[in-house]
Picture 1: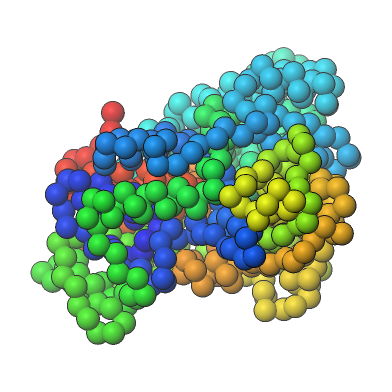
Picture 2 (picture 1 turned 45 degrees about the vertical axis):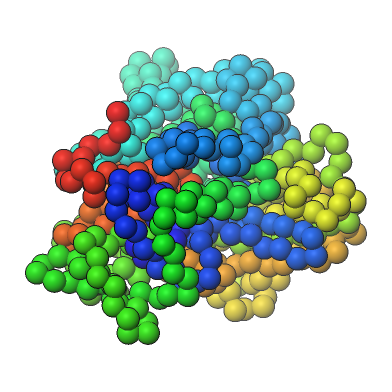
Length: 498
């Protein structure tokens, strides 16, 4: 197995239980892929995802690979409120976790009568899109005739009484303008796509499943940080006798008799294998094989497509977290169009203020004592920007601090030290091209939002993790591990768990 990301480890544990000898070669010195931790002076920070949706994916992994359930290995905490949103006009709203009635009431109170009803009606339609795509885009290997998923929009059309006809939104932004009819509700909707690096103006309406997943299954935190989830999965692998070799860079996938037969390492060592599973960026995998792995003209498999990355500021603060502070706050950009234009082009050296996510886990495990606080500020940024340019880093740092001042009282006076993390850091740690972050797979959009299938044109070579079907994010990466394990154990007839 190439890489020790979350998808690879999920596959490794399942394969080991099925009786396979599994060896994982990881070029860095630790596991988890992008799920890492930065520690200094008693402070701890998640440097990848900070929250978890769909914990059922990892509950299933632990049920299928051992006696101890997930909750015996990590402490899962439901985050409530799910998020606090601060809009450009100064309006604020805190949304309860996994409560439709609570969300409707909160939106009506903060944004005016009718806002909650419109959002609730949207969630009903989003559920319809979820029901239509959940199995093919999360629980099953990618269909051979994946073009069917690429062409049909699963988000339903909406009847317009005044027009006496129905109209179907083509993009997530059109849902906001046609159905929500409130700039703040539209910003709430679009932030769910932006968090994954997706432009709501071009992403298909099927992206409505992203806020729906959070609403339906809740948002969860792992005590000690999400890195603890990676630790638990790694330890489950070790208990199932999966072997890990760290500091081992794979430079070539070996072939024999027309199929994958092992890997070659940078020191010249060769490891033979019946199956090779790669948890790497598609550009990297292409270099390891030097052969086409998908059909000609396959829009799912462009290894050099520019994708956004993540800029984060890790703050060590003096003073404890005030009572009632939200775990997650989203401070929306004052000019969303300028933010999206810059993400799409990265033109110019003056980035506009972005949408900023503020994570304040009130977790004793992440601070030296109750008189201090660890905070993570983050924003989606162009991965192709020049992150060696001091001015770019300085401007984004200032943007994030300015946004967070609306959330954290006396922020600048409380900073003991700060650590900047750019897409270059993600590139170094994960090998992702330009430090980009993968998004979950989505239907429609002519296939541009699907990911390469877990199987390849080279028999015996499989893809796992966020850069393969069903895409990025902790739940999707975990599901990719289940799919790859099923394909190896049961063969190409495997159709997912039922």
